[in-house]
Length: 109
Image (cartoon, rainbow, N blue to C red):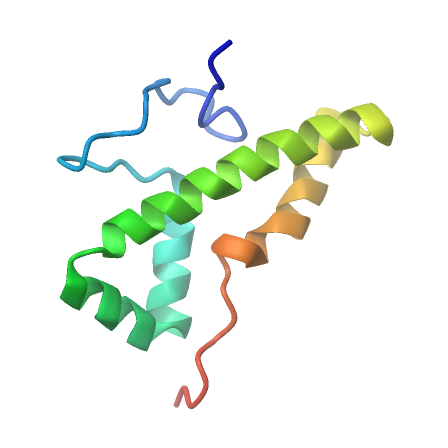
């Protein structure tokens, strides 16, 4: 059975295999990460852009977040009998700082 991507918040996105390097599509998770990283991790963003790998890193953060969110949401619904929305919200609180809302770089002015 194929795992559905993007089913957490934007269920309108297409289910596709991991994109080939030609085009990367960011969901809201990737866009949130980009805004956050640019504000709080500017050196990291600059290094990733210099290597040409910013979009790849954002996509990886997004996809890992989606995968872990889906698994944790299902687990919370089953084990703690939470509603889908409660489970989703709790999963987001747990996972968002692992890949999306990274801690700020030191010496931000």
